[in-house]
Length: 488
Image (cartoon, rainbow, N blue to C red; front, side):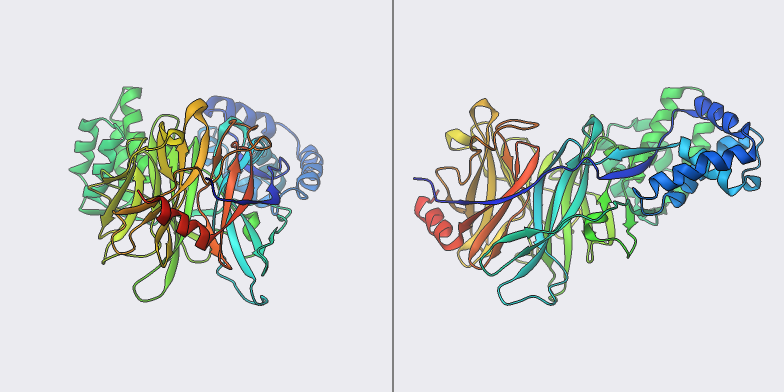
């Protein structure tokens, strides 16, 4: 018999009005044509064209002039090729040129789903029994490009949930590239991305054991100049794309959490950042950081990545290495166990694996923990976010895929001091899509990337058929007792 679970009357839907201003580029030759056309416009006409644009779009973006200036500056090399002195251009002409190389992108026009949830760093000014949380979502826009967005929510003492409204603007972060690369790890990862081995060996021989982005970029540009074959030049570009997968991003301090979007930045994630699983990780000394594992996708290759922050303003992002960091569904445990970091994964697309590591970004020797067992998970089983520590063991919410590719949620219990041992698994699904939840971008799917315990209840945010999101609640003690009763 299935457990009783309460669905909350709270839904978070995609909002097509949430737009960012992105760089729009149609190739060098067409861009040169556009620049020359704008350069032919007299100065008075330039002002009359850009002034109404600034008035119109200043209500949609926090600082549209900064965006247009930045996009114009991206074209400096083309100005040089056209023998145009960039620095001599008027302020308004730069803004006008920038406007022709800018477009609005609605980040959640298609879907807003697969939520993850963690404590807000700020728990001040709350009444007894209240809790402030941050929920991340997978937002999907035109072209099925996924990004990570956030909302703040409040639980009251009765577990009523209020998702706070989003701000009026949404901003991308500033990108900082100051990584120092470990040569062995970097080129080991490069091999898995199917870059030409001869190109890799050439560059590897020219780099120190630790190198900076600027050194690698200079070597690549020098090597490309010697190549006549465009396909060979592309192989060098791929190495730079991999280096671009290591970066830091910084949001403005005057943005609300709902104003921030982590949009694909590197070429290896240009088709999307999928299903971030956030966890509040407690270090040995009692301090904490937030980590998230997510899947970067370039249209062909999948690259698992790790994100770290303490304040949701400054983020450090890097790829994950090792035989265990393949495919999707990586989820980090919220603390070390027996001195080791612990991670769940699904490297073969079908089974749940567990692995241990001394380093948070290197994962080897994955061991199968769970295989599909019940009819509703015969296609695959995977985790739905980081396990939650309870007095009875590690509570892990899972997803199972059954007939008609229906996704349902289950639950498992792992041994506290040895999570490679499963001590309980629900025989029946914890949550299944009902008639109101089964229609959407991808029908018959419910999915979650993380849950949280509050006032003795498990609060489970979940995506509805890859379109919108909602919440469910189940009594924690009842769930744990059922898991121990069902056993393995």
